[in-house]
Image (cartoon, rainbow, N blue to C red; front, top):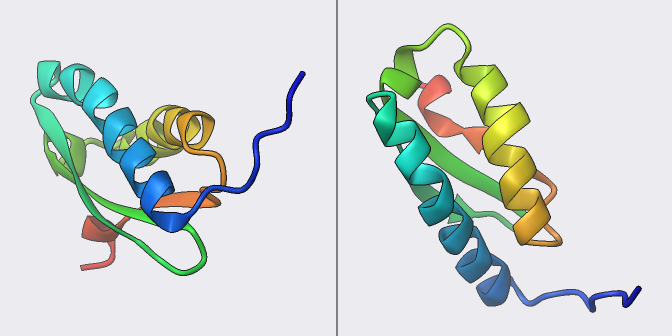
Length: 88
């Protein structure tokens, strides 16, 4: 099993965007969506869950068990995924 070298922030961001495009159809089928906001210096991905995903009572579960897991799998180096819409 090969060990992947640490990725540059631009490569991580590209992989995050690709992962979001894979996730988006499932969220849209439930009346929601996801918007990538930024990758911070701590390699935390900031997103906004929109529509039904933003108001769903289990949106945190969707974020952590679904979105975060997929993004972290496809973009090594990401340390967490947070929903900035919950901060407002």
